[in-house]
Length: 638
Image 1 (cartoon, helix red, strand yellow):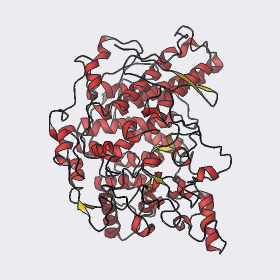
Image 2 (cartoon, helix red, strand yellow):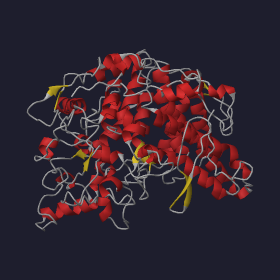
Image 3 (cartoon, rainbow, N blue to C red):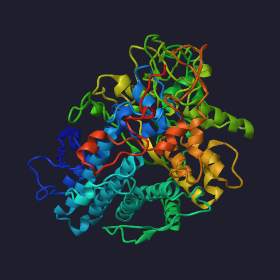
Image 4 (spheres, one colour):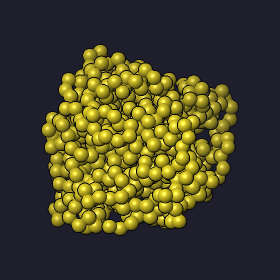
């Protein structure tokens, strides 16, 4: 078995381990250090903890279509198309649930195991430090974060790839080198790690780090996926899975966990977590920053703007104190529980120099979801798409989410502000918007939540609003369009806790809080359909939809055909291809049908053949991914 050595790099004077190489065997310590000598002091454990979290920056930066599972899950759902240009084939293969090559998904496989390895090292070596009684809380917090992050990366890994080896130590045993059942072995370990984190961590909110309440939220997320997908519990308000036996380890002193336990943990978050919904949903997203708000109000008052009178009126009716960059809003807002954070330290190549590791520390998903611009050189200008910046134009919202959402509004006779807060309506918002000659699968919408925001009319300058903010220093990429994206990527917001509680209990009071903030009619009597819609609208493009679909369907469609039906509903939708608005074509699956591909795979990706070969028979390919079957292989259709 290969060894997997992590290099070190200094970022803002912190020693971070920032590179990864192969797969299971790992040694995240500096070459001259050993487990006997490192960590030797609390600051060393803090550095290991930072290294454990930093894997998320690798996932969230760089090429999202190669390494970012959160981007993957939106593209694989019915919320987004592949889109982009003719050459953007990786994102299209994700959308059609096929592969371009047998190692296409190796990067997230390696990254998840890299995170697990760092967490294991943190757990195993923490008591090398001679902790004093006064430092017990610090020790327990760091240990709890190690357990939590191991559970977090393992959850990502098994939701992506299903049955895989379970690695719980830096010293591998023969059993750890074998694929095991996610349902029976891996999920009990994941829940045990989250329970250990819950027990050991404190309640203090630390920017970018987990605490007790975050662990309680993830206990619910993992349990609900296990109960729905593996145990076939279609409606958790009326059904429950058997109690899950837990693993004995520090912090996990419970023998088992039940649905009732999960409900109690979520209620603890509500009662004691101190989280609250932002008053305005738009406060969560960077386009609501005060610089744009001021400009919109200057235009109303007749004051000349820098580039004339064109200003972003969508946020003009907000309260200024609710703008993204105001206290309690935006990054670090009152409902943000867990997130990937970014900072101005990105480089074109970081760590071991692999291309997929370039540009980490910047929220590069903003570039992928940005408005595509090339030959036309119009998009991103004030008279065309202002204030939204250019990007790669991949993962555009599907006709399905726009149509389904509009139908719900029409049937209920209301307007849900979250729709236009989440995605653009290009024809009405950007009358001058042009499509490129090689554009594919364009619905007429883009993901507004994460598009880069511009404050300059000049296409050449591309000044993001961040570069105008107080305290900004120039991007280490020296490329504002690609480097200046520092908005958090939300992994869990407080509304998720509220909606999980409604789903588990059938009590609409929690769902009603989310609906009241959105200004939509309140659900009077609980139904799973109402809950499903509410989750889709509230968390559009936040990486929750695909795994929600899977758990409401069950493995092998054991409790419904929700996912395959929703995915197949994309077929026949009229989309713009090759840049011609007047010559739309019907969406069609590239090899067979979305129904067939979903049912064949249950939503799992193919395991990288290189790792299957490396493990010499101990790792098996997932069903539905026979490379000899043409239905699994990417096909050019435009």
